[in-house]
Length: 224
Length: 350
Image (cartoon, rainbow over all chains, first blue to last red):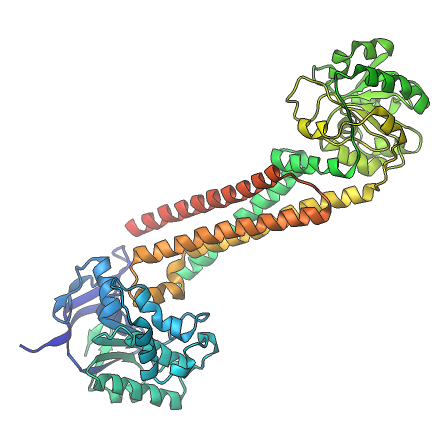
């Protein structure tokens, strides 16, 4: 039996309470992503890509079907357990970086430890290692608001890596970057993947999609 | 977008609500309904004027003063009671307690309508300024300004500010207070002032200022009434600024609490592994800390500016202000958060 990092079985997601105002974002999604795979999910705006990423990342619950991370069903887990998975098993990278602008790069990367249920002794050195691995260790004491777009994204990736998660999820990670910086960030994702981590990126950007092992196209809530 | 629209609508609604509260409080200051603030306003007078307080038991001094009055001002020394309801117990307490005063002088009771007929130098008992204000407003006092030296006996509170402004320091305005503003004691305190209207002072404070009648003769009030007026305005301005600042912070916190799921920090915390409960608790803590901080900063600002304005509130008064600030903050916070919570649950159910 093959080991899957991510597995979705007949997953649907609908929003809205009333019958007439219900919106189906995803419908009957079956998806398997192997450990160490680099997958890009492409599609137009509103096609359901970000919803899919949110389900995989335990930010949202599927309305029906099941989501498995590393072989474990996460859809019926408690809020605390899902938070624990977000903290230690997945790392998120967002298009708008998702950093606290008035904090330093170091403090932003430290954030997952703040929410960690386990006490991590060497967290300072792990933060430094994460910043170093993304090439921004010299910016550790600089406030995020003073950083360039590329530097911010590197800090965001460092934060996603700091707890050494198996899965990295990125939502349009190159969307706010210029072409040169974009190439650097794509290379960074490739390096992360080469280290054995499963990488799933949602993107419009074909350059980033081409760097992936597999490209999935999503349209109207269905994978084509 | 819907949530953002709801955010904006709620922000505007809560802002309007708080603006109405602040404006209402400001308006209430004038009428003295907001007792505590009225008390603060009233108490400010005590520091800027000398007060001569004679114990009710010191009848010799009282008689001496009253007998001396005719020599000090020209005209009759009849006692005139002015007011719409002049004969209730409180307003006639001087006469009740000092029958010899009333027996030695002709007691004339006039209604507000007759206030213009006051004789120069008469002794006016009761709320002279209140009555004047209610009946004839500025006209009465301005009319008398050039020709009368009024001796007043009475009580009242906010109205004396009015007399201050209208009559001016050039007037010799004697007030003998029967009972003071809060009417909490049956004892009669007599406060004599020279060339200025009376302040309203608490009993304990009055006892600290007792001076002899001989000092009264030599005293000439040095302060201009302009400064009194300025103090009053600064007081109110500071109060309003404090409340507005306070409400803005309340508003920001309440709104951000109700809609904090829209905030970046909420999303960031979630992707970093925080539970909803943890984020809510963090936000509430933030809310509480900011609220207490705002209360303390607002109060310190209030106290400091009062000092600059020359007022002299006691520590208990200032402590009460702090307590009121914090209480107001939490009441508003809990009310709005409660309403928001119920609304959210109903929406969720729907």
